[in-house]
Length: 365
Image 1: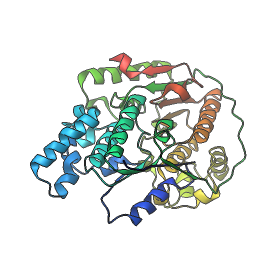
Image 2 (image 1 turned 60 degrees about the vertical axis):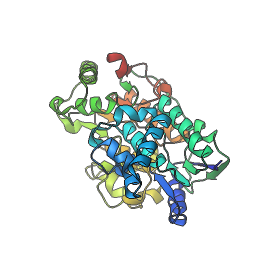
Image 3 (image 1 turned 180 degrees about the horizontal axis):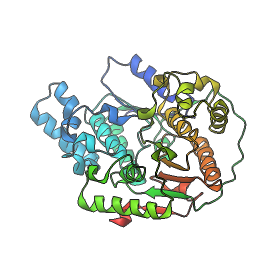
Image 4 (image 1 turned 30 degrees about the vertical axis):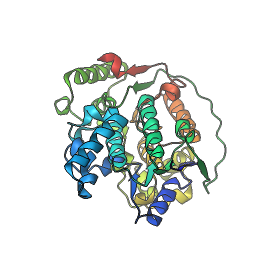
């Protein structure tokens, strides 16, 4: 039976740094590392090749690899419909499933996990919990950074990290608004594609999906176009990608946020304060910040545009409860001031606090 150490703390507490240090100290051992950016860990053209890639690198015989593949299909059944997909066709949640399977299939002595469930639906989260129980029973020592209660419940040891940054408390006064829309559904149902189509980041001819999924996505985009005042100028739409690192371009955080502000430093300062971005974080190199910090920075970079429409793909993934509630308050305030806010979310718990307008893509199939 392996140990299960869970690392908890706020986004700025250094959980990723803790895992990186742990990895460097045990790099000579049989270790697998699932990072906050699972898509960056996928190296093959298709899913099947990617899942077994690490086994091939170790020179294992085909019979052994086939046995391991049969095992991972039993432990993580959600990998089955993905095996014949191209890696570049995967959603964020699907990429997480594939990367996790690629780590589990190696049967490592040490398994490091950095927010393994942040891109997953509740159903997928529970499957991952069962899979982690299985490898723990096999003797794998697990070190996991997570705030999910289902993960914390597995812990044999909990490490609490505290942020060095301090902020004034913010009063939470959430109000529901008809200007807020949320897309829900399980991984791979087309939430990201629908948001990209609505924001004119992708053309309908570029959508690669099963006909039923494609039809559901187009239907949802039509619903949004009817409900939200469509702008001709796409510059008037702020968009935050599911992977925020893809839209960070400057050397440090402060420079990156300021890119779209038209030189309005007061606007930058205002949003940094509302988003609780510390002076310490502002001076950091973009490449050194965590996934959750990158998420907040990317949102700030779009808010300084003062767009009439804000679209965010999974805004709460990777954030702790305090940061999530603060973001809910910002969305609520924006909507009440006339801005349309559209976002995707696996869990409706947060969304239902600020809107009754939820669109489930699976119900459109």
